[in-house]
Amino acid sequence: METFAIDVRGVTKKFGTRTVVNDIAMQVRPGEIYGFLGPNGSGKTTFLRMLCGLLTPDGGEGKCLGLDFRSESAEIKKRVGYMTQKFSFYEDLSIEENLDFIARLYMMPQRKMAVEKSLERLGMVERRKQLAGTLSGGWKQRLALAACLIHEPQLLLLDEPTAGVDPKARRDFWDEIHKLAASGLTFLITTHYMDEASRCNRLAYIAYGNLLASGTVAEVVKAGGLTTWEISGENLAALAEKIRGLPGVEQVVAFGTTLHVSGRNAEKLNASVSPFVSGAQRWEKIESGLEDVFISLMEAAKDNFS
Image 1 (cartoon, rainbow, N blue to C red):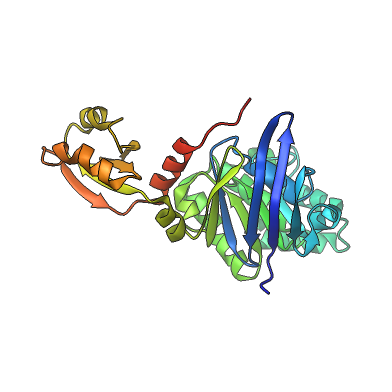
Image 2 (cartoon, rainbow, N blue to C red):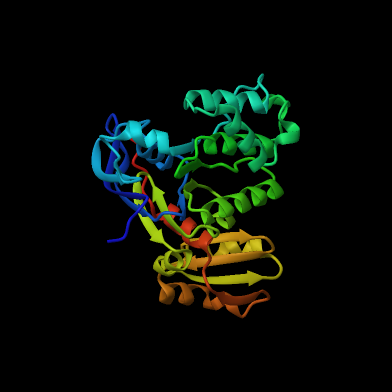
């Protein structure tokens, strides 16, 4: 039987009358980078907090790192690193002082050695005395990752870790993630960036508490069942207004200098756009991308807010 770092089912959480996580199942293998996607308010952060024991689920069963994720949450916390969306360290302390504080929280016996290792691992030795409040977004992110790793966890839960970070810092961050995963560390990462989702081994998409898709990128795209036309040329905005809302046309989205027109009913879609294909623009049927699929899933999902 295959061993999973995360193996849970039926995970449910309600706030009042609203179900924010509804009967979610997830299996993540050791050393895997698992992407967790969905619109804001979809339940991703709530799910992460239940996994690491910060929130008590209303339903569900299973294990995280071989431990019952409901009854053994205290032990799970010791083996998990959790990086929140918001920078949550003391801005009037230096990088080194912040790491030392985290090491104290975990009551690490060789605290100074752990701090030194963290500084070296993420290239922060020369900045060790710099105040956290003066760091750029990329360096704050690096400090947060170092703090997550200081107690040598087996699983990292990263909640939109690259939000607001420049492209180079994002790329450097993901390079570090892949190095750590290659050493056996497991990741569950929420993100809104499709290029980051494509760098995950597998991923899941959640909307309004419901799991809508999961698998590899290729599997999720195939399961989306979209037919997509890419259109280039002049007057694309005017063309978009003409075809938006026609039978079979589920989304009309600008992609750079092109337009993507997609729908799940290929017959209806092709019938609706056929009068425009012979026009001034260039039409090409392409393989649907991850972003096309996720926009389709998002638009089809129903808001459960009440």
